[in-house]
Length: 288
Image 1 (cartoon, one colour):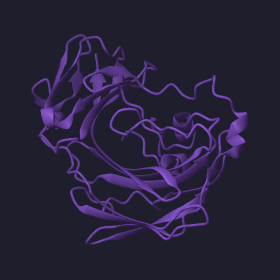
Image 2 (cartoon, helix red, strand yellow):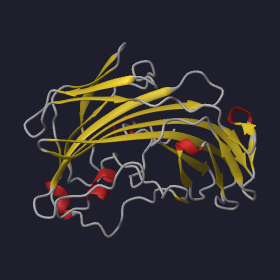
Image 3 (tube, one colour):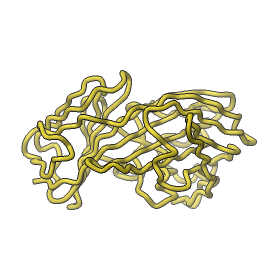
């Protein structure tokens, strides 16, 4: 799974920060800004019926003197992708040039009761004190209680609600979640049947086309310490190629396909809001 955002608190995994699909985060030059992000993620291993799922929500107030994108990465709410049609190495951690002192003015705001509801389920997100890696950022983020998939289905309409807090207005948003990826092949072989992947040859990828505007991004990871590679493509194309030798890893690893859907919103007191669905289908493989 491409690292559930909630993993910052649940110990599941970590995530990337965002440039394609999700719009770049910016802060007002004079007054700073408030950012809201709600993420729903599902992860399934090819050939296995039982997925895992999770959700996280954060409401971040930051001064103009900090890099908003870097802050979102630090609090586990970022997602960084290459330009569409391109591949790049994955996340490398915090930018060492980022000034840490202004981060003491960053707050993770309380937003009251936060719920994700569908026609059949209602999931209440739990506020948790943020375990800051900098000892400077303070506040809470909201996460699902566990990784059960049933409360967070794919291909349905979500109502996202927050009762609001001192600095966060009440929210009532509606958005359609994408369907889970299907029909995924790697060089002509169904993903669930892929056991080995040659990094010396181009990887021809296909999937059943989803909705226009969504993104499919692909990750290649190995356990030998080689840099991961991420490639991003338009979902409606249904096909893509990872160039030969783009990934240098070898041995045991994983190839993962993600269907990504984002929707921006604004509200009084929220300068930049985003709803994000990130649904992964992956397979353990041997790179050679």
